[in-house]
Length: 317
Image (cartoon, rainbow, N blue to C red):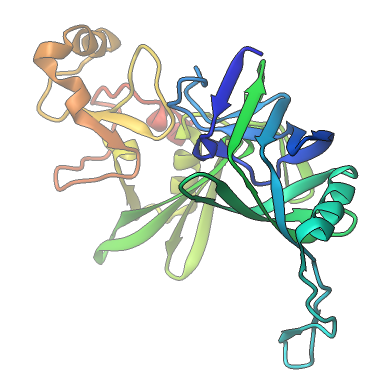
């Protein structure tokens, strides 16, 4: 196969990965895996994001099942406390292996996983969802994961949430607030209606009320403008996105990132291009800021001052 990783499970995210039984012979277990994700910044992942693998083969060498525990059914009593009347059953040794393989042949998905590396062997404890959910502990000497291609970004890359400390400029002075950003790259449902992705929501709290701005720009600009419209006219959201010095990269920008140009002369897109073309002198990459950052030199965007940022356009349209 095109990609191969040996004995490095830390590169992967196993939560919600679906496993199917392939074979078990001479203490060698092979499973196929869907919805398995690999981290970015690894030799095997050439992309800028964590990625979902289309289909992987996972082979455990010198494989053993140490324990198998059927998951018990819990209920809630009148005081809101969880309880179960079922006894705990922990199966070990050969019988544990039999139960595990029977369930593996039906297929399972991993909920929670804990990997413990030892001198020679590696031990894994995990809970699995099947028609009959279970906990199990397995061990092995080596594990090999192989695959050929990626299908899309990892699910958690497509749906992200951020919370920043922020400020509102009010008639009573500056007030602290939390700036919430929820970004969905894929389609989602909002208030019962299908919303085509990307969608972004930006929220702030003022006078005890949580206000939300909605948008579809992958750079979040329209959502910031929309939440400003929810605020009273004499209240401003103070952050780099709304500041005249908060410029974007003219060659392509990333969500959540701006470049502070205070102290520099920027009167056109060409001026911004020149800053990036002459990075050695402009040190423009030393000026990277989060959209939610702010400072004492904050000045709101206005029509009489050029900012390479569409916030004012969305605010006024």
